[in-house]
Image (cartoon, rainbow, N blue to C red; front, side):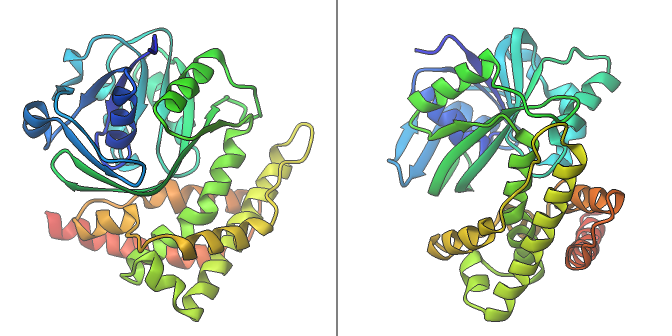
Length: 327
């Protein structure tokens, strides 16, 4: 059994699934909830999974962070649009502990560190976790895991340079492994985040603009070509950024990643991306973390991103209209 204790901030499709897996493996897990609090406190969590269905009839559920005891690891699985709330949502972290962000986008960990500094809060080790998973929330406390599930862990450093996994990250990886979650670690978290964006930029963004699942997009030759163009732009930014920031060996992404991601997506079950679900349910879209930040970096290092910029403008328009409707 693990010696680490965990708090899950954002018990949705990602945080709820991985937190449930950790509890199933015997870890001490505390779940912070909002709308589902009463239901989960009463009935626990239900997980429908390709890796095996299971139910946790009792979980440690909270509706305010001050009730959560000090933990070793805080897993942040909120949408990045809610990160400004983190100073009020984080429970106490034990000495030697860490914050692990399971969020999409670029620069997430640096933003969290800056937010803590701005609020005069202690800054523990900050880790990033890239989740390669198809998972949706289908009801209160009810999650459906449809495919994949691997996590890639890396440590954030202020200078964005590669670094070996610290002891706390190795301990977290061991817990995920015991929880039947495939897990790897990387010495270069920023480049890993660029690789994830090669998929997230086209599929999240276009799923909203085109009102389509991954299957519907892949079935259309024109859309497939557009996806490829967007992927090429992300790779171009990543490689220019890697060259700009490298202090030793050049950090690059091979173009073969595009073919690999297209092929893998073809074999996925029909999937409604997280951004599409947010749009359908009237929630703010994670445009800045997934598209805005990379485009800003591209401007700084003089990389052209005409297709990404057009997609960003389209999503911004739709997001503003969503916000207006919610007022």
